[in-house]
Image 1: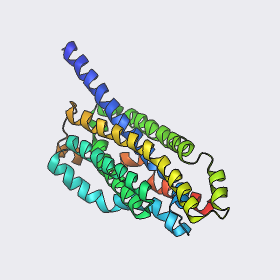
Image 2 (image 1 turned 90 degrees about the vertical axis):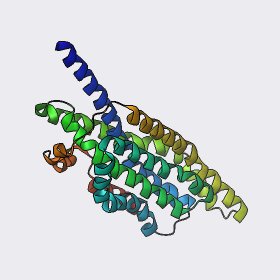
Image 3 (image 1 turned 90 degrees about the horizontal axis):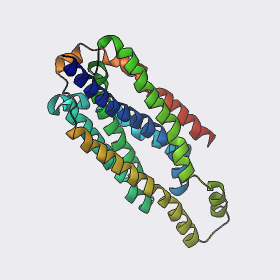
Image 4 (image 1 turned 120 degrees about the vertical axis):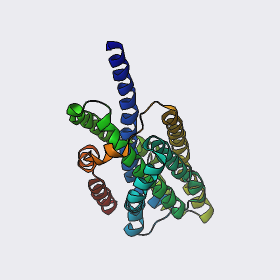
Length: 258
């Protein structure tokens, strides 16, 4: 019996680490959009804050449209498979950034953001119940706090990392653009700037793809529907995630200031 208990605890720890990585991804991808606003305003030559506001809207509209469909999908394919599917949808959205950058197409960027948001909606719906079943119910609050820390650390790191890549020497670039360059020189400068986003998003897509494969092959337990019905998932969501509304407000302020 002690050996079985040790084995179960080890399995739960392994599963919690996997879910913790997912919560890190939630925070990282959610808050990375704030960095994209000034970047896309330059490379896509957006003329108004209303257009820049769509950078924020595209991702959160996916939550609005896909919340209920996500529950239906998970009921059909299972929660464990839903985690992998959500990551694959995010991979598709991330890879769209490559042709979007090459064409400097704002519409393609918005499509990629919408798909990323759709993948996140599916991931969040699938991952929340695992926090309740991966351990005793009396320590669920502790596990929720751990996931929240992972989420918020990622939310703090993502804009720092991406801004250093995308927005380095951005003022000098803007000055060159404003210096009445020839159309050919301006096009070349904007294309070089747009290409900065390709490498980090390829890396992100590879990481998400590997994690999707890892979770598909993992020993995560499948969640039964009756467990979902007996767990107050919505209350846990509000405690775990960086509030989408707060993220929306913060990004909206960044647009206004930009």
